[in-house]
Image (cartoon, rainbow, N blue to C red; front, side, top):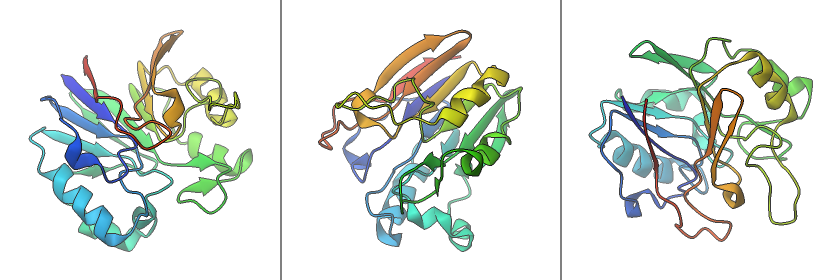
Length: 205
């Protein structure tokens, strides 16, 4: 099974060359302002991709998906995961969009118990974990040296032995890392100045 993974396209999706594969994953911030027009353009593009499975996790810019009434407008061939999972070829993909401490952004939760309740829902047998936020200390550092990932998510990973953890959110930290049994990928395709600098990640699993 070939995964094609990206994040933080911020309305620049039509400028990205998407490789062939079986599962296309977007880990959040498909829009900039999160309005209906931006979102519909992305959904039209995303649903038209030839990949058999398409998984979408909203990000902190994607306000449109906060309203459950809008979910009926999502094309049927896109799986929107908001604290939900989907099984593909006997592998469990679990997705959650929440980010810590980002004021009035979409899917924002306070650090601590407020965001922990979302991570508590992640099944321990998850194979591929997709969040918008990085865990604290893993591909989450900005230019100043501050780390903006989620501490509660890092703690949760001690009991979730996912083979892969995909996320975005911190444009500065695009790349990959391996810790214990998990391969981590910050999938941000834009840099901190919103320039398209990175290609989608392709993995055969």
